[in-house]
Length: 82
Image (cartoon, rainbow, N blue to C red; front, top):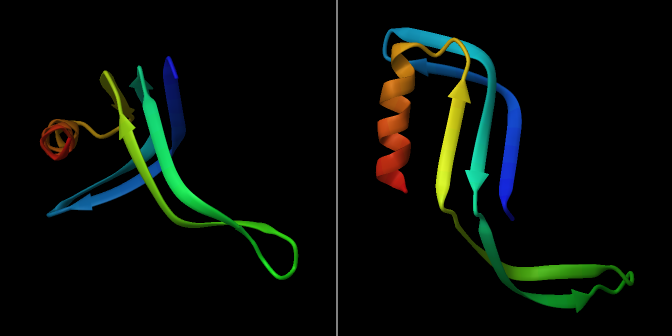
């Protein structure tokens, strides 16, 4: 995918500070690899078992409204996890 955009609302409580508001996260040059087993249940439904997903991307852009100083802390923790 050239760009995957996720939008929603967040609520965060860290130490003595709290924040909430809208957010959007854009994942640029996303490649999603999925591996799993397909089977048909007794009821005739298609079911996925033992699914594994791997998401790679070129860039990650985040915007969390009303986060202020906590945004810098949040960005550092996200980038270290990636």
